[in-house]
Amino acid sequence: MNPYLHAFGAWVPKRVVTNSELAERLGCTPEWIENASGIRERRWATATTSIVDLGAEAALACMARAGLSASEIGLVVLASGSAPPGFPAPAAALAARLGLGTTPAIDLPMASAGSLFGLALASRLAETYGNVLVVAAEKMSAIIERHPLDPNTAMLFGDGAGAALVSDRPGKWQIMGHVLHSDGQFSTDLAYDWNFPLHMNGLSVILQATRKMPAAIKEVLERAEISATDISVFLLHQANQNLLVRVGKTLGVAPERVFSNISRYGNTSSASMLIAAAEWSEQAPVPGPIVFAAFGAGVHWGALVAK
Image (cartoon, one colour):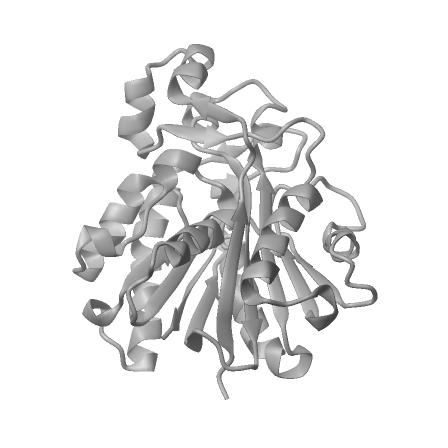
């Protein structure tokens, strides 16, 4: 039996970084930033805030909405492309923060597409582990401010965390299928190793994303025998408002069916899709099938459909 999505949760830092504040440091105008990205502001965490701090807040919100206690979680998956290098990676610390005892915890060190891959993994493991908590937490400001600011990347990113509860128990949305893809020949187009500034070949990334995300969505919908016009909402990685518009046009769906909150949070990498899902689910969502899709460094991309 296909597993179910039960609830979402999200958390973003309190500090709001406006385009005006960032434009002064980047030597550009606030209008240029918004026109290029659709972003008006983003949230940045304090210097002492960790990936675990961010992820725990989103996880607790998700567990509360699902009505679950720590003892009922069977597995934790934590996706983050901005966790500091070294080991152990933060998933075990997150499980400990949540009071999960010896519950297994898995790290997915993936930027942007990590939450989608986490949902797909959880959909396969829920039969064995029951309630699987998928968390994506990103502190992109630590990457941006570690080196001299690059106008082409510093304007894009924000901090935050999202979470989802996948279970073998019946719930609100049944996962009908997913598709995942990776292509390492483009791995250098979007990369970061902490020793050098984030590198992004913007033209390549936007071209890849505008082609690959709609293709993955069409692929998963064809497998599930569902039309794009029957989807209530498309919950996509919030990379760039222009990208969201292009994906919607390619699929032939109305712009309002492609959920967007990038103007307020910026690109929060792997966390963005689940933050979007949490906000959408709180706004009296319209019944019907929903689609998740993401594209990120690696490159990795894919889509998932639930109804």
